[in-house]
Length: 134
Image (cartoon, rainbow, N blue to C red; front, side, top):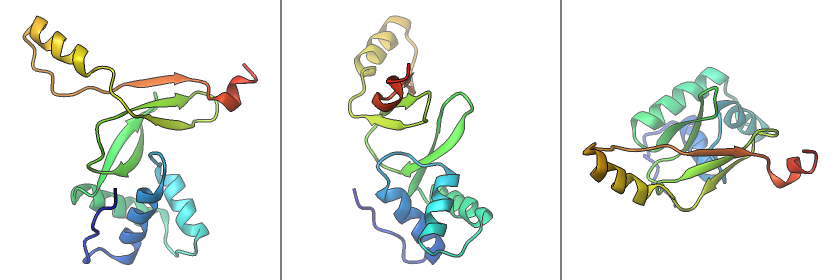
């Protein structure tokens, strides 16, 4: 999904957004920074943090937490609700296409008379490359 970038964004913020938009999976700050440096962008880590804060505030990017350390990852806002598989060895993150909890959430809400406003699911294990050594 290509989002329309606000023309008032600085070039650094536009580059940060483009990098996130082109990523196949959610990306962390370090990955964003290193990729931008590799492509010749001259910026420092604090510029990336400020740019991400701005993009989150403008609603262009969504900040999510993945893993026990609650590290922040970023993805384009407005994507369909999804969950993740995370490799415990290499850290690979794969988004899941379907949400297996939607129906369970509805049933649970009816049974408990609890208004459920959302949920988060992360499945952990070993990717095909890492599982060869397990």
